[in-house]
Image (cartoon, rainbow, N blue to C red; front, side, top):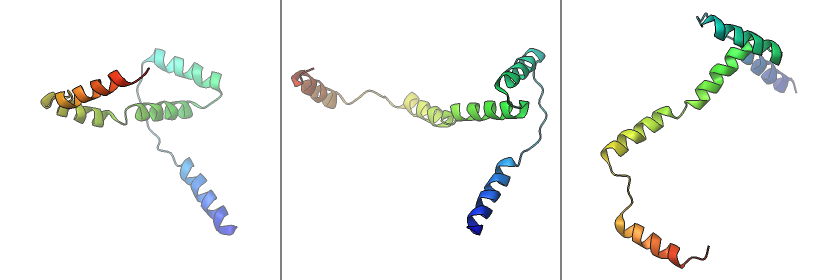
Length: 96
């Protein structure tokens, strides 16, 4: 039990470690963020942390997409004509 409490305490301390940073944003964006943080009942820091986290999640596969686009710029993405014919033949026999 003591070990488990120690692990939980260590995890909570790890979660609370934060890097202070200064950013410059346009005044209207700052004002909107300030209003939103008050409406949501969270600190400005938490709002910005959540926003950056969301942005990072949205863009986590950008490099994969870029690599795939590079491959398909050089290689055709069309299926093999023989395989395509076989697929179409099979679909014609299927009941929809």
